[in-house]
View 1 (cartoon, rainbow, N blue to C red):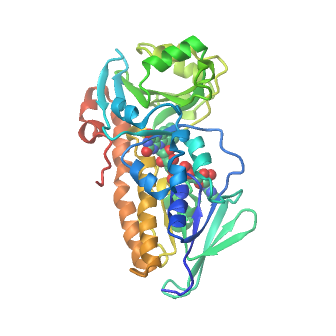
View 2 (cartoon, helix red, strand yellow):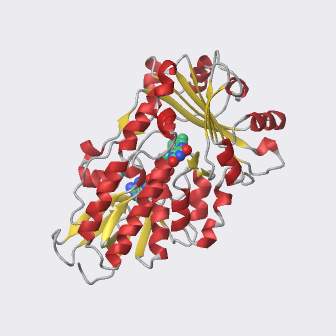
Length: 402
Ligand SMILES: Cc1cc2nc3c(=O)[nH]c(=O)nc-3n(C[C@H](O)[C@H](O)[C@H](O)COP(=O)(O)OP(=O)(O)OC[C@H]3O[C@@H](n4cnc5c(N)ncnc54)[C@H](O)[C@@H]3O)c2cc1C
């Protein structure tokens, strides 16, 4: 182990990167956190933080734990009542409940854009730094070895190790494994994820009939749809509330295959036979609602060479999965927690950097089995007759590696 103080380069200021940077800061471990974004992305969604919520609270400084409520789509929703109402899965044909998964300890819905904004406080995230490559200084077993991150603006950052928290299309992953092995798989489903608002009376009605955290359904025609709240900027004015839809169905023709821009038309053609609230919502959508192109992409983790403990991955960069079992964000936090624990042990000289990272990587790979389970869950949401045998029935949304 070298005598130079540890310095960690965190690439990506999403959920995993932010949680890692706070955890390191709490333990006085030096780190630099960078993100390629210069302005927040226009895409947003919500995450149900369930089993990983206590881990996130442990990584954050107390002043940000008290800000978690501000990260919610509905800042007035108590964690306990979100847990009591849980995740609701309905029959899309009738609107009846198929299963309700409860969390007696409470869950927190987190809106991804608010979460990134609120929780990046105090971290000095360096924005506009897009990592393009990684180089290694010295041999893997040198005491004084280091790693250098190279950014698109020509600048570099050198540290003891680098952790790629740069999401599903991770560049760090490409650097570690090469283009082919790091490439994501595209699942054969049409996928739409878009937000919308409604006139006050309709918004109030939808809010009253919708489950507050997760309200999803599957239809016998082999289709999945979910309705969620994205934001309530003014609690007293329902016309300002923003909802969003997630919808998937197996690719059925050329237009789905090419993801042609007539997405609203294709969605409307699929809504026949759906019960409320899903049916009315689609019928009420304005003709000019923006539905961008989207694909369901996953990546099954494969072993990488961590170069003597100098480079690793966390979150979606390490295992990207579909949202159908609500695990990706929870696993990103679990990775962060495990990574920080390893770094504390290295700092306290209880373990070498290499051994710590080997153990961490092994855990990440084990947690990565969720990619396949979530893929099976995605398939099950399009297989009405066999849905009751699917992972959510057997395991709820407990982590697979627990
Ligand atoms: C619609 C939807 C619903 C979901 N619902 C749930 C849910 O209910 N429960 C749950 O647990 N999970 C859910 N997830 C998954 C969850 O959102 C992700 O698993 C989680 O956000 C991953 O966090 P991350 O930090 O690994 O990656 P990201 O949040 O993608 O962050 C990656 C960051 O890296 C930056 N970056 C990318 N490339 C570079 C580069 N080259 N250089 C520098 N920076 C870079 C990006 O700008 C970004 O800020 C859902 C996902 C979606 C899409």
